[in-house]
Length: 336
Image 1 (cartoon, rainbow, N blue to C red):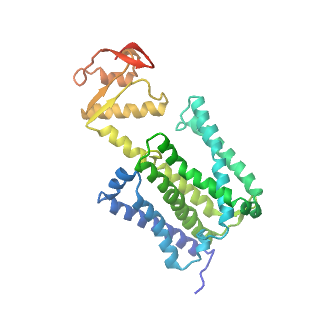
Image 2: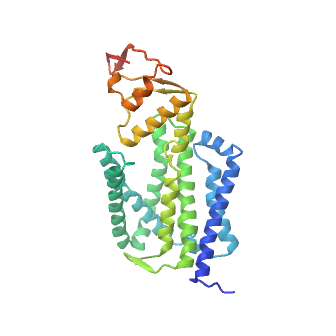
Image 3: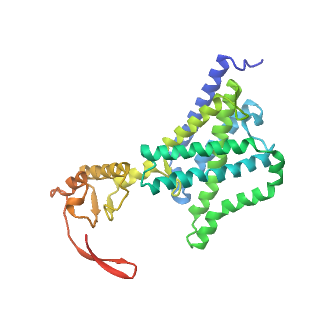
């Protein structure tokens, strides 16, 4: 029986299938999480390989069971030389928002998580996209084939760089090696297979690719997959260096039996950072959790909201100490 490709019913079924696949993935992850296995993985390796396998495996199984063409979902080696060339160029172009965007916020003392800093980073991201579109218009398979060797070498060097730096600094750990593997296999291929492969491919089958942007055919699938990509990352924040979600780490800090906050007043002064610090203070104050705070500030210079908690003599005790602080080869005195 022929599918009614493009009909409202077919479009609805495609969207429903994607939703069901996503729910199944989340249920499987939650089932494994309840056993404590995922947390054990993160402690040992910094990342969850089981979660990554589900993200890759479930969509691949669905494509296989449905007997749809793998190529429709981008799962093919055809033209890999050209795709690798585009990927290397895209990586180099991504330096634009990293250096100009993030670097610019640091230079201007802005926080990229606030509106002004976010706008600056967004503008550099848009500039990067414009540059990449310009590169794509000039892309040729002949040049890509001629650059295969150099592109493969570049890829290997980029993957080995964190490991080599760790060796040079004598700080190479299992988590560093695990991060390289996880980012390349599960973050790289895993997210591509699910979002830009399965989700976008399935939506392309249902809605088609009626638009042409700079010579590239696309459709609603590209827009929806990109929105899902952004939303999933916005609601699942993590520290790429530590492999731990931000909200989980924040909760651990907030609820720790004993917390030591050293050098209060030297932290980031952005509104976002001040608000998060106040949330930690306020929670621990109300829960009567043990907290040790050191600072070189005078009491009057401490943020009023924090000072109000710290000056409550029924819960806090102040000690003024004269201690040496080692700076370079000289000592200076400061009050803590």
